[in-house]
Length: 215
Image (cartoon, one colour):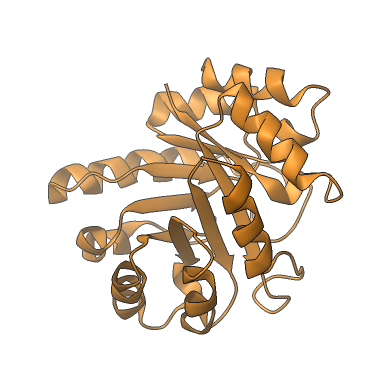
């Protein structure tokens, strides 16, 4: 059974706290917070204050996902918010090992994200520096994209690389995750399903979380 990470980008932004608590009561395991800068992606999302405020109301781990350039500039301000996990996109960081060390030095779990146009082979050199891996099944920052079915092969390959390296970290899938796609992702080895629209734009947040948890 995969864990569920509820992505608040899809929340009603006038009710974020309320909806986060509903997801928590329904059994969500993680709260996923996308931080976008309008440069790496054509969207601007949340700042450190929101992470601090959510830390006050939820007991769930807060996973901050940097979809931005120069993640090293943003790390100090988010490290002070109570975030538990910081993940950055691998193609947005020229010195990823240094960045991963800095995240851990700040007392946080460190992760890398890989977009749908990139392969996973480079993770073999990063595995001993990361605590989690996000594989994206849509391009970051753009809504309404079709789900990239290549994610299944990448997911299986990531599992193989980890087995070969003798280092296993949780693999999260981000983008287009629903009860339908989620089943195949779990069967292919996903540990965490990052779900936004299928949770927070569902008729019932509770039922949506419960359906994903049951996969």
